[in-house]
Image 1: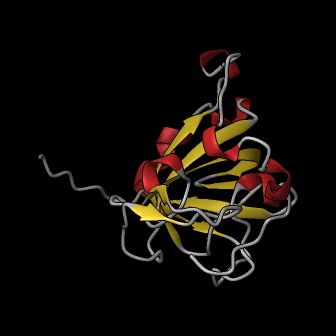
Image 2 (image 1 turned 120 degrees about the vertical axis):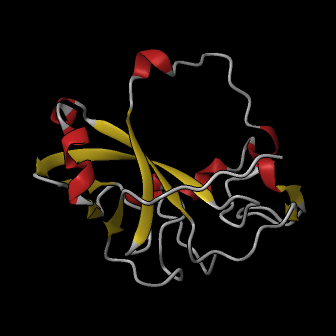
Length: 158
């Protein structure tokens, strides 16, 4: 297996300082605002980002438990494979959130829908382009019929 080293390009600022009470997905945090603060070195990479309404944030789960391969996920009492969940305790603790871009001020992006802890290291930002992500025939596996609990869901600890 190959090894890869990543360098954070910035950090996320949010009102959440501990896992308890933090939304577990952006859908539970639509009205919550925060900031993405890029290191000055990477600020030129934000050119033209203002034209996008939504962004994917790719980040490190820097305060999650060590990675496991099977776990009991939120909304279930049956053990599942980690790759069939969105749990933060993964072999590579990398997270993905879709947020709404409110505005840009230099190297700072004001966003809404933030479900991250304050100080989370940011690895990358990608614009959301619906034409590149459309899916009509979607299955959601073991989550079928269990998604009502997602809205306003809060973590009891990650």
